[in-house]
Length: 512
Image (cartoon, rainbow, N blue to C red):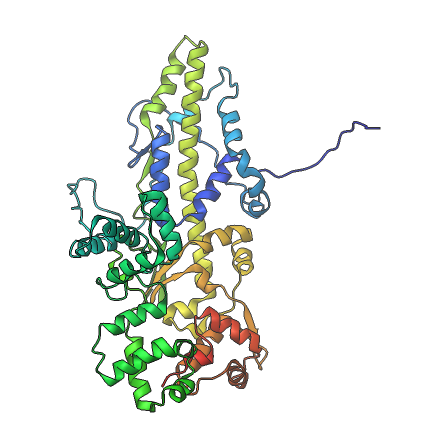
């Protein structure tokens, strides 16, 4: 039998302002400009530019409440409630903007406070008064265009030309054809209505493989290297040995089993060294050099850090963010409503719309300022923990530091620190570093102190760089050497750090 009952529970929910702040906090400077442009498009009450001082009789006493005054509500519980409230953001905003507010509208709250400051700090873009210049468009030739141009030099009939075009279209950005010829035969049958066979397609493929760059149209790395060696002088003894290594000993070559190659081909150490040198100079991705459609990715640092005679100076880079203000015309709408004696339903609906847009504009500006404040507080705490590193850039001076250390120091939730660290970077005198770089676990030493795992990785990298490449050190040997230096570390941890440094195993580090 079902029974009805009442239960009293306490729940924590984030307001739309807090959700907006969290979203702004986690995006890097490179994306902030796009986010601001988006807000400017959807909210006519938000404008670019500095706030001008009012010179009329408008008297301001009220000010919009800061939605982020309660630090414990917006920061400490952000990580626990954000997932539940993301879906309710639109609903809450809609309910707030359409609620009945009657005739009790405080006009002064919206027409006043013209001290909303902009948020430029350093690295501003060009002045608005400067003449805008159009950037010329660069015409680029893609890999496919280059191959199509070369196709015109082959004397092919219409059928062969269609097959060759299908093959060129199947070449990926690395320059390989990774689809099986049987599948390409099916593609030709369905899309071009051409009945062919894998042997005929392969004969056309051999012609395409003669195009530039060398190695294009290969179906495997082995075939790619072989095609490039064929372009060299095969009468050269070293080139002939390199060709035999690629075609007859490729598996041994990839595993660097040089002794097996020497035994199989009956060659000397010097001949092997010369041949391997030829192979290693070949291009494993012949299509990569023509990939003009790949755009360069630029890192825009969020923080700028300078060492001024032993004193660390920190500034926030926000040159891509324009100054914002609340629209004066929208403020004047409230004055018009306050003086108007006609307060019918349509007038109330219009004022409700204006009220919602003004709220949104003020919230967005406040969220931007709160974002700056949170970023600076977090970065200042990181600098305090890693001060020795920022002075000299020596990785061995990095201290163990986790998110909880910074969260405790600045009295904020770990999730807030995580959002700052995951997508931000800092420009120093030694280069640009992601903030995640400075967070690492501690490893105990023989003296009982904790050192950063970054320091251990730095020592590990130095040991590997100084090793004899003819007899590279195994993970067990690396473990012994680190233990002798006082770092209590296991072999599996050495292997993990080595992989994180993108250093291959000892067998693959071997050189002749």
